[in-house]
Amino acid sequence: MTTMKREFGAVWNLYREVTTLGAEVNQLLEEERRASKDQKRPKKREREQKQREIHNIFRTFIQEGKWNEGVIPDEGARLMILTQILPTDAICSGTSTQCKDYIKGKDGLQQWYYAGDLQSPRGNFQQFLCRRLRWMAPLIGYSTLHETIAPQEPNLSLFPPGSFTLHIPFTLRKPYISKDDTDFYIVDNPVKKEWVFKVPYIAPSQWKGALRAAMVRELVAWWKDLEHRDPQAFAHRRFRLALLFGDEKGEEQGAIKGLSKYLDNIGSDEAAKIFRDKLRAHFRVPDDKPLPHYSGCLHFYPTFFDRIGLEVINPHDRATGAGKNPIYFECVPAGTRGVFSLLYVPLLFHPSEETARADLATITEGIHAMLTKYGFGAKTSSGYGVAVVDRHLINLQPQDWQTVFKQKWQSDT
Image (cartoon, rainbow, N blue to C red):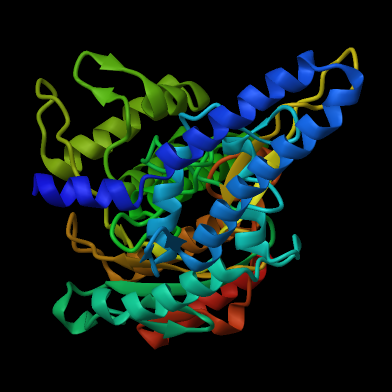
């Protein structure tokens, strides 16, 4: 194993090669600064020649995967190896642009992602993501749906009565931004990627958090708009949300904080007491015992994308009005298609069909608000993560419940 690691490092050691050339460039830059007027031009030509050698290394590796005598056909692996550039301080463009910044620009990631068209990513890396997405779909039990992939329909006869599934294809109207678990990456803020296949995706936990946040905001807006506020109605709607998503964050023995405290403050002491009395009655918990931890009825599927783009934020100096240190964010660009999917399984209780349909109506309001109004992911307050939904492509099972869903969805548009 040690021998294999050494051989791999010897073949794919971009850091060593770039650092070696970079040291020569930095030395030439220093000599160029100290040279007389007549000597500067030859020094500059020599320095630029060394920098072109570094550019050719990057260009060949990114576009073709070639390095020394080896080839890496997998673009995802190339992207990981590019991270070796981060520790270098080599100036590989002009007199001040370091390699780690140059590689993110128009001759690096932007060319790889966009192929010169910043409005529509069509570079080689996008083709790789498209192939990878279609290749991985059958491996994880997904199927192709409306230019993307979606989970296959489960057999609802195996689930309790009142269960339903919902698939909502959408197209991003604004870019989607998230934070990956990987800290060591060529871009400062990488978009979240699936661990094995390295395609951008939204994890089930992210969908759950985004939808719950949207539905809480809708609950608060409804409560504030009422002329005559009924604590019983607020407690009931909060109770239904708790059964859908699970126990509220901050509902702990001896200390109520976080979301629980926020909703207690929004409502009233009476509404908070009614809410917890409902939970105790539902789970049959005595007053002297703490409320249990419980999961909700909603189960979410991951959403996968086949495109990655770049967003740039360039803070400007107040004195000069110029930006010198652009910050790059990986994103899923506008125009990318995805599918939001969830499964409703009432394991916590055995609802009547009327109750399950009421939950469907509540969920419909929340999904509509999340996708088209509030957005999902990071920087939603700046308009990111908003989508357009074609309701004619929405698939709800069982089919005889679609009338309830369509009526509620259309009433929100």
